[in-house]
Length: 129
Image (cartoon, rainbow, N blue to C red; front, side, top):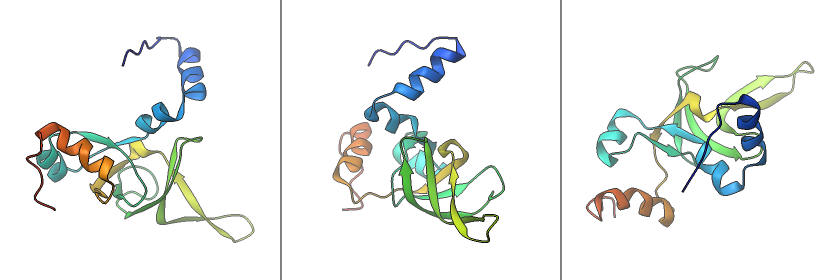
């Protein structure tokens, strides 16, 4: 994949705004925990619904939860249990940037996701099956 990134902020914003879905998904990546890095030999992965993540930055720092929604249009994720109160006292889910979380447990029920991780090892990492 050939990508040419400009140094001009306006062009970078335009690229993110007009990016197709398959590129947006890759932009929603989060770092893996130390144990997962050693196990799979990767430093980060695109986030997915049902992944378990730990918030590393912001007002919810230290909290852990399951991803309940990935918003490709806003480049945000929603985590179970992270809610804020609106002015009328209703609670809504808080959108978080995926760069501010760390994946602690990967949802591997998806065959495509498993293939991505096995590609690095050539089929060695099949202990979970």
